[in-house]
Amino acid sequence: MLNIKPVLKPKLLEAISILVIILATISISIIRLGAVPHIPIIISIFILMMYGLIRKSKFKDIEEGMILGAQGGLGAVLLFIFIGLLISSWLISGTIPTLMFFGFEFVSPYYFYAIAFLLTSLSGVMIGSSLTTAATIGVALIGIGEAMGLSMAVTAGAIVSGAFFGDKMSPLSDTTNLASSIVKVDLFTHIRNMAWTTVPAFIITLVVFLILSPGKQDVDLSELQAIQDGLTQSGLIHWYSSIPVFVLLLLIALKVPALLALSINVAVSIGISFFHYSMNAKELFTILFGGFTSKTGVEAVDSLLTRGGVESMMFTISLVILSLSLGGLLFKLGIIPVLLSKLSGVIGTAKRTILTAALSAIGINVVVGEQYLSILLTGEAFQTQFKKLGLHPKNLSRTLEDAGTVVNPLVPWSVCGIFLTDVLGVTTLEYLPFAVFCFVSPLITILYGFTGWTIKRDNTEMKPAVNQ
Image 1 (cartoon, rainbow, N blue to C red):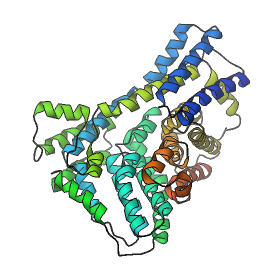
Image 2: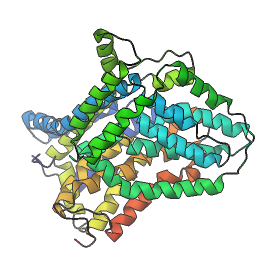
Image 3: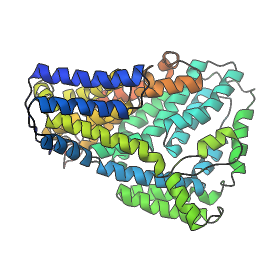
């Protein structure tokens, strides 16, 4: 939103008051009333419109602010559409079911917590959804852990850690696409850059769960076996179904732009699907738009595989458009620029800027309880400061994921916190100390900000930027 010129210059106290009203409206609606984010955001847009008119702003300027804000999300909207297509095509090609099936082969009661973390990590990357992973694979693992007499808190912590690792690093994830798009960074460039913080966090988490695992070996694995049998019944398990994964990895290595890479992968996946999945053109188009429907009769498998399609992304697309319109108004009415101008004297260095951005993402998660808004609002607010300091935008997109995406499940009243407590049967405060990946990630990104390690400056090689 760097191209939005403010029409007002409110006083600092006035800007803070308006922002507090907006955040209170959204947080109360989501946390206390259980509303989806869209309605409180629309109410907040209306409040800002009234504020602008009271301050004698032209409605044309107000409307322009919303339009310019929404335009900044067109790249994200296109990516989300292609992600919906990719998920559908990976399901009918058998890519997702096949990888999950062979992932179950590695499940063993020995080092159970570590294996639970690894399995949910793999599932999260393949599915691109932390909540779906937790509600399917996670529920099965919780049942096994309970049968073994193991700690439900540690098991849930392993599941949450793995699910959000997968969500964070998956090209199919909406939050990953959102974080890269909001600051205009190529999707795969963003994922590669996240490896600098995510890989150490992954290793630390794995070591912790290896140490915590009890080493018991006698346990009933019937729940996982039932899911594996259900995957087999789908008729989608084939060795060649893994080809789209290798094609995607090759395209990433060749640094092919995200939209082109996704398009090629969709085409390859659809081509592979005709080897084992019988359908005509009408059925194919229906699946690509409306998603794949699994009919194995195994509830956990059907829940896992019934997803994808362009239509499935509309919730996120509409939320992005509304949130960016809200952000555009906050810039157009001078609220964010006034706050940033006051902050710029305090966060004048790279390490302070990264720290403040991380704390802002965490703070919005705590106050609002919504990870999308954490990414969107923090990303829009700090783009100017990162550019002013000559920091590459991928530093900001990585910070948004490290301190935004993975922190949400640690907040008891957040969307993810409430959902996970419901499906896993373990309260947020119980699994929080063991959701190691989720609190190690923001600590590492803040540490890198202070040391300057892996902090990329525009048009230069990676080098420390602590005092720049």
